Length: 438
Image 1 (cartoon, rainbow, N blue to C red):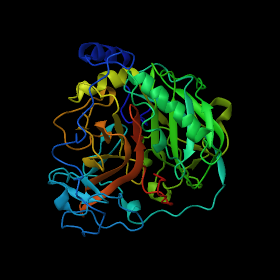
Image 2 (tube, rainbow, N blue to C red):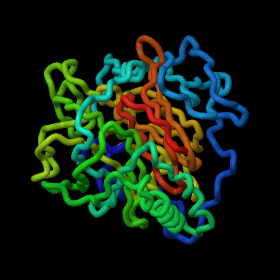
Image 3 (cartoon, rainbow, N blue to C red):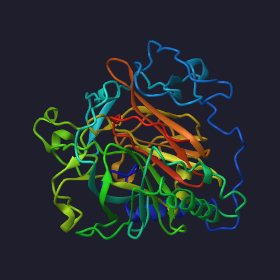
Image 4 (spheres, rainbow, N blue to C red):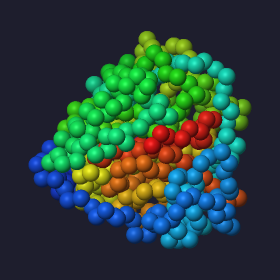
């Protein structure tokens, strides 16, 4: 399995043993409903306080990230480090300061690269929007997070981030006895509120199929045309008893050619080209034939793998991170952190504007990635997660310590629906910044 998904898929036998040994929580199909968290539940060590007030410019401290221009802070977020209970306020979000003894590095091919420094320059000097085609074909794998069956027959929809507003459906599942019933109610609401409205309908709507040649775990998706120069949101759904509705942010098509295709996100630029500095990694179009799409492989297109979460992972994963379950009405946020050249960032930290109860980082075992409860920074895959996250509008900021200062690695605003998972995988700053409608 490729490594685009936020957590590498575990080998099947290992996953089954882990699930059977640790699962004690309520499943989506059982009639018992998990007790909700208190209204003020959150991390005890960090978060936005109730009286933080409107966002202001407190100015960077000596250890803070340099200021970023052209990116709006999270609305109503922190104003200064003093509101963050020992963390630092960056772009309106409280983020733990990376330990001074853990400078950032990047990794490639699931191996550390000691002494390296990630390229974070795109956050301070954004890349230009290329003058390219208005629409391009798009394709990729659908990979599962954790464990699951082959990802065939899943519905893949892509929306315009600037018009994607699911807030009207946040409470659609309230009062349902099971998580499965609550999810179904929310999904029906979205179909009516978004899909049936021409102004907010999906830009593309397809179903994942067997790859060509077939892959062990993944199905493939493809569409004939997606607009370039727009931030996108992916919505991936399937049988509600097998797959958790999964939403992926951080998608954008800059319509210029990279010059070298990387079909596995763990591959370093220097692996595919002799001199990576000669290539513009802010470009998103490839011409090299996709190894997964057979006859569709030719031409210029956008390649991006998408992630989905299985119900088995939803049930068993929280216990490895110290939670009994993800309580009904709450959700989870997960992803990977990349530098501006698409390499995983090691020793970064993250924060959410509206945090859930458990921040999670992971071990460094690529073939068997599990939460590492004592870890406080990203591992060699750049993975992170937050569990029992309250639904609603939210924002994620990640930072890392470089030789110069603590710098921004990622920033994304998103909307988390109850009983779902949101994947946030920004791959550098977009050429176009758009505020979401919620």
